[in-house]
Length: 336
Image 1 (tube, rainbow, N blue to C red):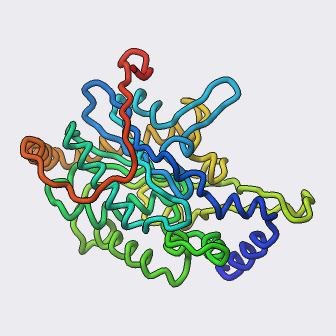
Image 2 (tube, one colour):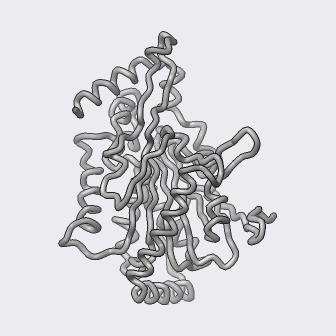
Image 3 (cartoon, one colour):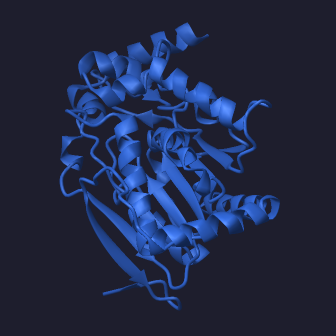
């Protein structure tokens, strides 16, 4: 069955017009003006970190420019859940882009810098596509190395994350050589296999430590369609970028959405099924972890406050600029 999917993906990819193929392989226009943005809510004790995927950025990945008004996912979540939200940005140009583990190191530095400004009781993640692998790498290799922080990250909500890779990356890599594409491939991907084996030992194996963390996975139920060389509607190639098996790997709960790989990260408004599901799972994840590990959470928070009082070198540097938008508690609108 896997061989059949690979052959199908190769055939569809070959049928793409040069323009459509460029849309998949060339995202150099999305690497300028990198800016990690924080939406600050008054007295928030929870930090939610949004992490975009391949060829995305901290704004356009999550922005739905509707016919009547625009809807920016991270900013709306900050207001709805009365949390601080950091929309993390990094370079993904497919030309000399950093490896996923290097992005995870930048993410770690960004979070530690944010916590140095304002410590939070809990931290959660919303990740789209490759952003899910960035978060998985961060948890496995950075967050868990500091046992004092173990009980603070409570929840990961991923949207179409290729935890087992994407067949599209296998064929895109023939047209464009890039480290991120290599790490997204299925089959023979030693980096991804090692990461998933480690994750399994940490969170799924009976022999592993009991670490409080919930993973909720949303997956695309609609394909992305492109124009074929011939332009005929019957042969226009349509494909799901990440299949269900890859998106739900080792998740505690999952849900399908009638959206394609791009639209799943762009809710239309607060009544959108993705928005309602993501916000409900963020609430559920915090409630579950804090109820189960209340004592440990309080000890971890006390240690964090000591770290803030005596800041240390976080290690790593952030290549992107940063900005903060303060939210009005009554209206949710940004204050200048």
